[in-house]
Amino acid sequence: MINRTYTIGFNFRLDHSNLTIPLTADIEIHHSETFYVVKNFRTKSQKERSILPDVSIKKANEMWVHCDSGKETTLSMEVGQAIDKYETDHPTD
Image (cartoon, rainbow, N blue to C red):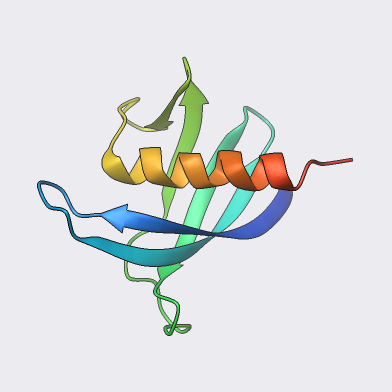
């Protein structure tokens, strides 16, 4: 069940590079077993289509991991940090 949605901004760092790309993505929080569906990855000027496929992530042992593999990636870590910041800045009632 989707409980809440919002949009985050974060810098996606390319693997093995110092190059970062500022992205935004939409977050859907699912509370059956708390996990986050991250969708509609886009640059600030792009609005129509996602540049990455949807991913599902969750926080496990203080790490942000993909729900399917249980592994942390650069993407899951950076999106997770943006989720943490958003939820700290916008606490729920």
